[in-house]
Length: 195
Image (cartoon, rainbow, N blue to C red):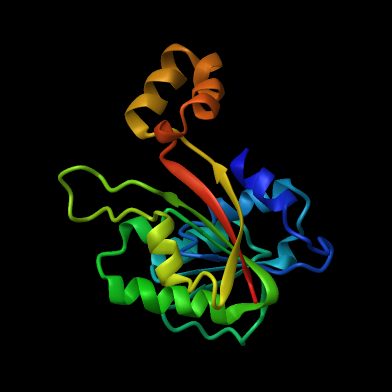
């Protein structure tokens, strides 16, 4: 729901828009774009894992997948209208790698194009692995105000313990809680526009 709402705020020629999923894994994130009417030839994915890229190619044979580092992509400057990531930055162990990937994401986005960040805004308590993708971190990594500007922030999934509880016991309350209690929202979809 958050991703669909975010896409509605982008000014795109849907028939020509090119989309890149950074850290695409087995390609599941690109399926939502297919369901929304984008064609396979408009979609690309990149992941560092050969096994995941092999799975992605089997699942979506008409999509362009590359196995390479997101910190040094072979795509041309400004090659994409939307550069998308989902739950990647929260898992990156190094802030230097996160900065390199963010810079590459901005580089391959066309001027006036969009970066769509679907990530968790809270760190996992007691863990050094999960690093929150909050407003401050987004601003630092993507040079908000200089190179990019925020177009939209859409509420996504609730924090996992609460989201799981509501999904199993009271699914009809899920979106009401999401709307009425913003701090309970753990995942956000942030849309940036490249200057």
